[in-house]
Image 1: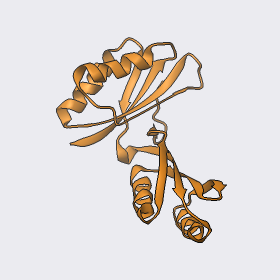
Image 2 (image 1 turned 60 degrees about the vertical axis):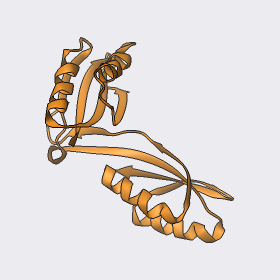
Image 3 (image 1 turned 30 degrees about the horizontal axis):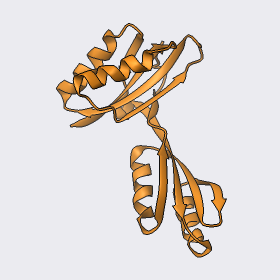
Image 4 (image 1 turned 30 degrees about the vertical axis):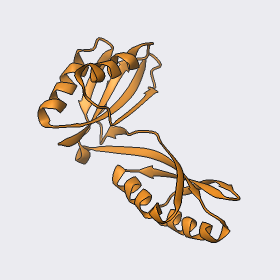
Length: 163
């Protein structure tokens, strides 16, 4: 089993997201992560879909996505030939005494504290999945009350790009 990240150029119209997600649900595939945003040309959106499966399943996903009429182009973003990132917001319950430990950990990971309340802080961290996972793991000694993740987004390195 491996994770694949697919970058799709799709028409920026209603129903596209539904058709893409419907393709996954009809075939019993799971979407690990999904992000969508408008491109420089407002007629198109860029969709990044991450899925896990064996080679046959991932190949089938790519072929089925390419068949959708709204999909103009699809490429897989190989880890060594692309830059993929995710943003995570984490709310950590901490009093004044614990706050300095959370701040120290935040600094080590080059994260940012974006909100401070009397009994909690919200930390923002952007990076690869392994970095986010390591940060969350190190927060095990604290009470994490809430996590929000954006999902993976990525671009091919160099001049390679979707049309």
